[in-house]
Structures are given as structure tokens and as C-alpha cells.
Image (cartoon, rainbow, N blue to C red; front, side, top):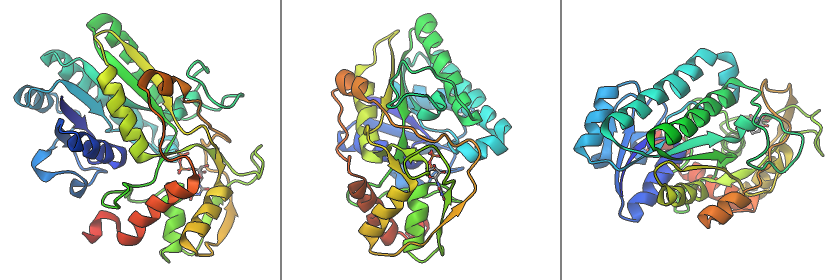
Amino acid sequence: MRVLVVGGAGYVGSHTVRLLNSLNHDVWVYDNLSRGHVESVPRERFIQGNLTDRSLLMQVMLDKEIEAVMHFAAFALVGESVQHPAMYYQNNVTATFELLEAMRSVGVWRFVFSSTTATYGQPDKMPIREDTPQNPINPYGFTKLVVERALRDYATAYGFGVAALRYFNASGASADGSIGEDHDPESHLIPIVLQVALGQRDAIQVFGNDYPTEDGTCVRDYIHVEDLATAHLAALEKLKPGSVLEMNLGTGVGHSVLQVIEACRKVTAHPIPAIFADRRPGDPACLIADSSLAQKTLGWTPKYVAIDSIVETAWNWHKTHPRGYATK
Ligand code: UDP
């Protein structure tokens, strides 16, 4: 299929581009490089542009005879969204509508959307199913929920076929260590813990140890980035005009911050000092996925479930690229 991957030079996008390429799809990456890395995607398939540039998007879709769009170009940091909500609503909502309208103008109807567990807020019951009420507790979650709701309407009114994939915590790196996670500044748990192992930081700060969880630290469901890529492809292949797929992507297993740090100690053989710090605003205590819908609908199962195996791929990437893509 001819696929435009918007935000394809980002973390999850680049791993998905790689999978699509390996299966001989005709893939084009559209990214403004505000957070992505051109080194993570094939140069000859890269187009630099903004989401807000509707005419360029239309031109690219027409020129390349695009049949489907995957949309990864969003800001995705809970803490940042609390501090800078305007930036989040502008980029994740307003700019996304430019993309949807560009698609509508040129008749592209297949759309795979990166949604998030943050749309659920903090539900009472774990694991989280798709029918769990979506009550976001931070601006990031709201921005994604707004688009999810709009996609239902675009499917009904305009015949879009949409998939909203609600990721839990994307983590790890490609199995061969050639691409991986590189944010600046880094805010995600696993890369930061591994920066301590690399000697780039003195200690990991644990944000809150008074949560109502077993060890008092936040629990998350860490899902490998290559498993997310596989799910995107499976969802793409299921799209039909007017159809709506909304599903969770996680492993169904939760790990606390302390457990993740322990896994990193084991994998890296480094003591990794940890310091307890205040809670980070906007963080729910516990998020674990029930992904049985994706398993049933897409025939998808995550390959990586053990946290050690996820951390191993991340460590392989970080130790060979201690400054991320800048070392290349
Ligand atoms: N976290 C932490 N110290 C850090 C970074 C993250 O304790 O330096 C915690 C954070 O509060 C959350 C978990 O690790 O409970 C995962 O955070 P991350 O930013 O990786 O992903 P999020 O869950 O926000 O999408």
C-alpha cells in the first residue's frame, strides 16, 4: 500500500516506517523534524513539512498517490502538556484537523491514529478495557480524546476508515539496535534510567512514592515499540470505509517505577542510584491494558512481555548510541 507516515521520523513512527519498508509497502515520511530525526528514516523517502501546511500535504498525497495516512506527529508528554496546554491543543488538535481536511480534499480515507492510555485518566478498575470510561486528567489525554471523537464523526459522515490505537508506555528499541528512542530533553523513565547506567546522570529521580500501589511508585504497562509497529500494520490492513477501530495496545502486565529500575540494574549490571522526589503533575497511579480486543480483532500479540527483554533492546540502543542519533 502507498502510505504517508506523518511524524514518521519520531520514535514510534520510525519503527513503523521500518516495518512497512521491510514488507515492501510504498512508504513516505512527512515530518517537520521538530522532535524527530531524519537519520531514523530512509532519506530518499523523507519529506520535510508541517502539519499545518495543508496545501503541501495535499500535493504530497496527490503526487505519491497515497492510499493511507498514519499519524504520529503529536506532542506526547504529560508534564509538558500540563505546563503548556496551548501548545498541545494547537499541535495535537488544530494541526491534526489540517491533516484530516487535506485527506478529505484529495479523497484519502484510511487513517491510523496514535492515541493513548492517557485518554482514560485514572480508572478505578484494572486492567483497562476499551469500554472503560474515558476521563482524561491531563491536557495531553484531552487532545487525543478530542481527535478520537472527531474520527468517529469523520467515519460516519465522510466514510473515513479509522483506527485509534491507544498505546500504553512505548518502550525499547529495534532488535538490531539501529534505531531507538532519542528525545531532547529526555523525560521517559527507561531512557533516563539507562542514562544513569551510562554515567550521564548521577541518579534517577523517582516521581512519587506515596501512590496507592504496592511499592508506592507509579505502575505502567510497557509495550515494545516494534510490537506497536506490528499492530499499526495489522490495523491498516483492517480499515474499511466507515469503520472505526479503537483499541488498547499493551502487554497486560504492569511494572512499578522501582521494578523498572531494578530490571535496568539487572540488564546493565550498574547500581543505578535512585532518589525519591515529588510526584509529577498529571501522573495517574496505575495504568495496565487489557489488549484482548486487539488480539482478537487484529490477530496481534506482543512479542515482548518480560520487562527485562524490553530493557535489553533499549540498552543495546543506548549503549551503542550514547548521544542518540547525534553520534551517527
Ligand atoms: N518517572 C520517574 N522518573 C523519571 C521519569 C519518569 O519516576 O525521571 C515515572 C513517571 O512519573 C511515570 C513513569 O515513570 O510514573 C513513566 O513515565 P514516562 O514519562 O516514561 O511515561 P508516561 O507514563 O508519562 O507516558
